[in-house]
Image 1 (cartoon, rainbow, N blue to C red):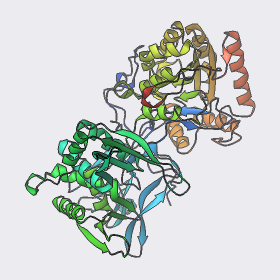
Image 2: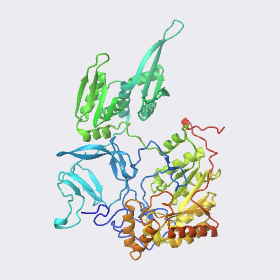
Image 3: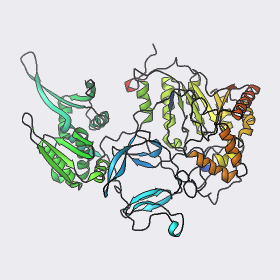
Image 4: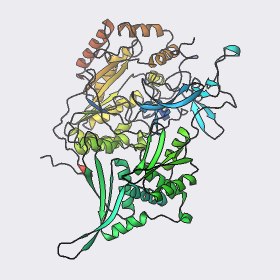
Length: 636
């Protein structure tokens, strides 16, 4: 039986060695200003960058090994390509119909899978129990319906003849089952294209939302015997995203609304927010938006928007059933018309009730495939849009929030190549600078110099720590160990420029690998001090999960003469194991070799006047919590 921890042919992908070296890679050129990997590796695997659905931006931890209690990771998955750090972006189907990169999954997340039921396989939701992955050399699998799948050779797909790998590994009877032309894959097929939110889509959405959950009316007021007609509109929802969408699209239609709390939450009831408008002109505009268009003028976009709005107002999806309920026969008829226009199959169940109006329930049939087509075609507001800066501002503005220093880059470098365009880290720093919140940054890249204005502002009140990670001063070792990161010269230049600008900057020697880069320890500390660093720290190499195999493969390729010696030293510093997950020893190791490393590092820092440690104390006295509307407290 094959060992699942040692797949045939070895591990592969970013950081592994099965991915062939580009033919035209120039190994003889080292540029001091090479801020990012594209200047060193002209041919690399394309990385998909997708927003992460998240309702919280600040992560909390209570590990005694980590010198901070709060952290933010603007990116999940990493393009640095280190053999001890990989970050895949494989999309996974979540139980709400959305997709999420596998790097963004967390233990406990609910995702779709399959289970055998007699002779059949059925879709079921299942929980993530553990989380790690390796990116493989890419193969493109094209299906009859135009779907294109990118997967590694060792990946398996479920076919009509059972599980099959993408590629075989041997010849003859030893060849493992693998995909061939005419195999039929079992799955939901190609995802539908998301709709454009044009004017017809918005009108359809508002028509359904307001007719489904809103109130439009008039009453008569007056205490002097003369009645006056008072026009009003109100929409109350538990789901804030749908309410935000309706609020924004009403404003685009020149209807300004006011927001208020409709009812408070309790142990058995979710809180509800509402929007409202009054006045003849505004209510007339809303009535116009909710008019039924004549069939000849009912566009496909209007139908798509109507289905999205009525699902947000009256729909539900649970236990594999997609249903929309309403007591108004006209609304039920319009739902049926729109579903027919989009070729959905459905049934309508009439439920009579004695004391209140009877209700009709529309169910979309066809299983998961059709349910996903519904969600992706109409785009209801169930798919939460990632917005890191706004999420951070909301969390900092909560009454219960207690200000503590936040670390950015503790898990994934915040200055990924895509940060040049996405500016996620920049937006987070703008919120922290505006609220005067303490923050620590850890990076391997030179793009941090772009944000020097914000870092200088934070440093004036003692609100910032910056640590630049330096693994080696040897450019050739850096190129094989961390192929997609800035050169040693570029990282020291970052330290020098930040220090000269008055930003407290330290160096993190990480990871230290026995018999690979530990001999450089004293030279790195000396170079850091010469560049203006005020503090230094270090981390011993950690090899959790599949990284043990990746790192061992890297050793066998680049340092075969000392591979066994390196692994022996690592085990000696980890109580005989290749990894030690225990608090208190996982960052520093234990035993004679680890103690010697600690003593060498402390002596080097003392010799060059550097403080020892990864963080310095930051001030929390200047924090100004944000309020709604972007306002700040006066700090009184």
